[in-house]
Amino acid sequence: MPRIRDYDPSFADQAVAGGRKGWTRAEIASDLGASQIDFEAWAAAHEDFAAALGEADNEARAWWDRLPARAVTSGEPFRATIWAKLYASRFGRPSHSPSQPRKPAAEPKPADEPFDILAEFDLPDDGLGPKPPRGRSRR
Image 1 (cartoon, helix red, strand yellow):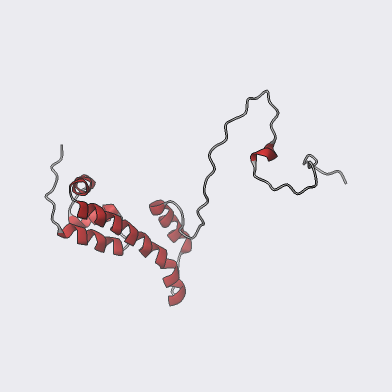
Image 2 (tube, helix red, strand yellow):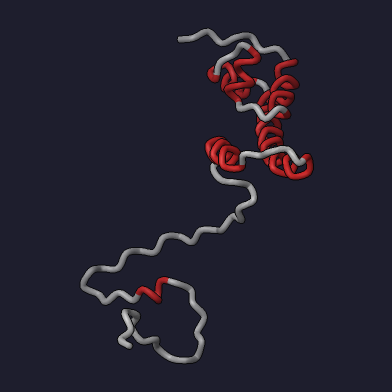
């Protein structure tokens, strides 16, 4: 079992400083000469470090969020595709995409019951009655 490095209270401030540079937790750990195991142990034992890691994550995301605006206002070239891929690998999805609440998955219908695809969507009733089946039109 690896030995946990001794905790220094200054690590909390250093973690937040790394977040302000856009660093991941791995980059912050490397800068502190620590491992992910050290981070987990320190966060479990020291509330200040756990809070600092959360703040560092927030600061890192904000740093990455600001990059496109900096590029637009500075007039410097910006490689949006590379930024988007790096951002998605770090945070999951671009922050400018609206978050859509997900509906709970519907229970699957047994195969012997008819399936109405339109019933699966919350469509407003337009008052025109049932729609004709969709398909190729014959003109």
